[in-house]
Length: 385
Image (cartoon, rainbow, N blue to C red; front, side, top):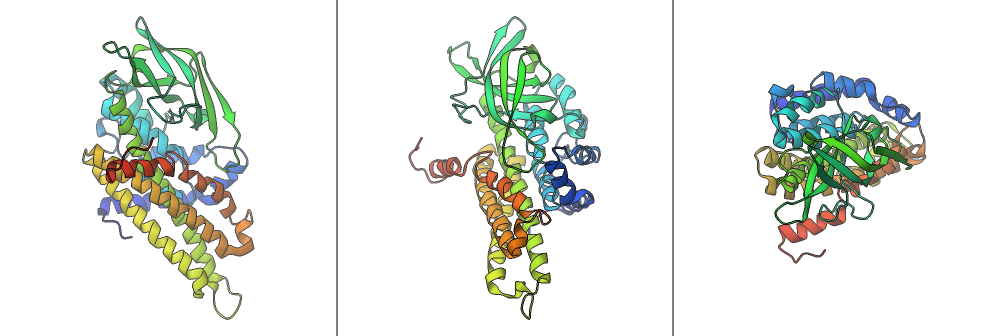
């Protein structure tokens, strides 16, 4: 491992990997194919404190940083058990509530998020606005000491496993009359809330949903933090999301490369293992380099975020997510090619990874929007959208 990490972080990685390997890809894919959830693994990860490793100690967390949670996410994926909700529940919801929630909100939500006893989904994407926070139509309106939330979302992960959804909506600014972003905690059993499954061809336990908010009444403290800090809070959650997405992708890439290398060392068609042939070895070696470079950028993004540099972290997190997605897609593709016909069989589990890893180029932010960000903010080019 070439990451400049502490011995404590390395020990965390080893412990998480050991736990993940007790379950492994057969457990993960078996549950996914049968329509079941990976509840036992989620509960085990939470009970050992790994889901809350980045949250404050006083709320049941480990007192570490987002880099520690990224290590947890990555090593579970390396073990063949990529838990998508680690990208959402502890990373986004836990981080936003920890940084911006009131004392009451922290006491109410963080211990459960840290232990895994509570699970949050995250909802920003809308059918007509995508993730453009300035075009969202989901709106919260004050009614006495309550909020009334109306609107809809699409492609929201894991809602059927969630106790609540952290929803990005908009509220009216009393000074300007304009709408501004705001974050609400919406219990999934709230009256007026409904979710519809979106059928996809991905083989994964976490499903996708369209959400509908039909005049959902929420208590006054459902609004997270200050009503004037919505946009700041949103980006405080999106940077960890990108960091975790990068960790998720590099973990998947490492899993695929490990399978490919094992197969290439063992498979012999002529006089030597196929891994001795450059046509097999070079694509895997080149992809390994790309994965390690993406891991370094992910590490850097986490360092900047934990240091409080949200601007620097935003640039690095976008770059990390881009690099990790491209490396992961290449890793799974080359692993399948290494396996030949076996790469398409259920027994090896690689074909099932292909659709799932391809998602990393599209979500949680598309590669095109990352390139727009880098062109504008890193290179100073005119805004193109």
